[in-house]
Image 1 (cartoon, rainbow over the protein chains, first blue to last red):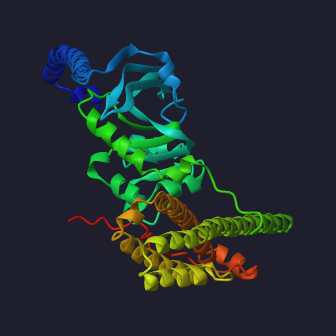
Image 2 (tube, helix red, strand yellow):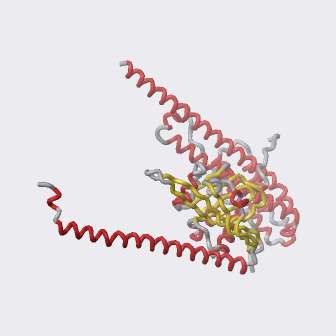
Image 3 (tube, helix red, strand yellow):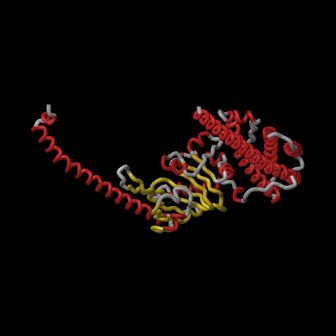
Length: 251
Length: 185
């Protein structure tokens, strides 16, 4: 029997009519979804800008809409990755009498699907940093978050401490493991296990200690982040800023 | 037959390459452990050098605390004696830390001593040195942990046994008690 004979003329018409109605509906649905997402994104960005402006005004902080120089302030990931790197909403000033700076850092990456189409993805992070008394070798602490973990892997070998809980939660990479072990005092480990630091990464690079978290922030958590950064900076043993002590040649 | 010979040769070359890498890795780790220990030794020596000055300063204000001062001097003499293993050194340092803790507790009862510039400076220097010892200890123990794990796990255990690599001792000290207790009335 010819398979075409199995299709009843009536059912063919019904299927055609259904497709005729459903396809425009589907198309309209997609368009509506794009519009809704676009409006939501626009309103979200506007709300974020307003919140940033409110925080700047409330704490008497400095604000710059964009500064290309800040996009290359640091060299550890997420800095130095992708292209079209931008630093927007640069906010600086003091909190508790101590300086800090924060900005929304973003970069773009491109990927190709199986059909050869190029897809551009924008990766955005909120970076907040405080100065240190002197430069130190780079130490990276990345937390238990898929994106931060992926960025953490770019740094090299993971360092283990005496705390199993800490090892489970944090990946530590260091240019000089001596410095990392010196920094990770029991007090510092205890602080880094605090629930308020979940989903954040911390990096010591040069004379700065910075923290980053995925997506641009409305700065609602700024006092908490700056407070944590200052706490961690204070926890770095003072002798690290003095350099190593040489062995007595007479001994 | 020819392919079998080539196959065996390839496997042999791979085994030799792995053995060289494993051996070099163990040597590197052992050197790292020794270097880390030397750094701790430098800091311990510095700590021991500070104590006679500290005892002399306290003596100037608290002559009647002879027992406490003697305990510190004695613990310092034992800890500063050369030739101890890391575990023995750790035990001696713990005794010294406890004696120093008692000395600082005693110092609390002498406001003039607490305000003495030299005493404060020595206390600060001791704190700094003990922080360095603690940091060195963490680095040393991390490397000992890695070395001991390699020595005891398959397949590096074969290379370790063949070339006489042995377990290293941990340096386990109690965290310093040099901070004077914060007494509030």
